[in-house]
Structures are given as structure tokens and as C-alpha cells.
Image 1: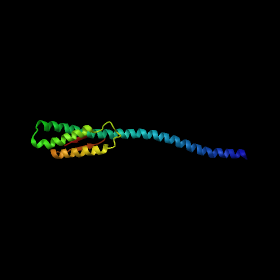
Image 2 (image 1 turned 180 degrees about the horizontal axis):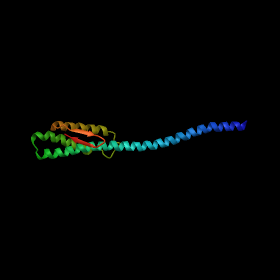
Image 3 (image 1 turned 135 degrees about the vertical axis):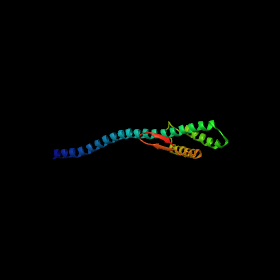
Image 4 (image 1 turned 90 degrees about the vertical axis):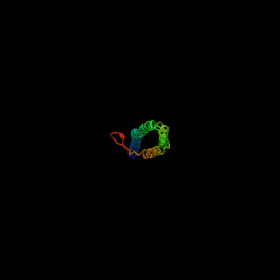
Length: 137
């Protein structure tokens, strides 16, 4: 009878053991795949943000050159907003993905960009797509 009980216990314990081993293997595999997927997702979104900010920066530098060469009294407000946008872009924490106010700063840059476009009387069309990004007028 003791032999039968040992065999029965081994069967019951095998189920528990296999369930535990399966859980541990699945957890390890899921963690590894999750890290890989997280890196890919982060790189994609980081590239989008970088592209967007780079577009704003190029736009700002081009208009700074245009306004600076033809500086007048009425362009002083435009230049002030333009300098503010350039300053915000230069202070943006490109190398700190854990920066807790990243999205807030990005929203401020977008707002300043819209303000500048309004002052310059241009209608930008910034598009992010899988083919690339661009700013068109």
C-alpha cells in the first residue's frame, strides 16, 4: 500500500512541479521578450520625437535667418518668440529618457511652434508617418 501511495504522490507532485517549472520558464521568456519589445517601442517613439523636434529646429533656424537679415521693429515680437522656441529646443533633454516632464516640455515646444506659425502667418502641416516625416506649407 505504501508503494501505491508513493506512486500516487509522485504523479500529483509531478503536476505541481511541471506547473511551477512552466511558470518560471514562461516568466523568463516573457521578461526577455518584453524587454526587447520595449526597447523597439522606445526607439521608435524616441525617433519620432527627435524627428519632430528636429523639424521645429530647422524651421526656427530658417526663419531666424530670414528675419535677422531683414530685421525691423515689427519683427521684434516674432524674433522674441523665435528665440524662445530655439531656447526651449536647446534645453530639451534628448539624452534623458527618464525625464519626468518630457511630455510637458514637448507640449510647450509644440505650443510655441504654433504661436510662431501664427505670428509668421504660415500654415505648417507636420506629418509623422511610417515613410518619414516632414513639414510642408
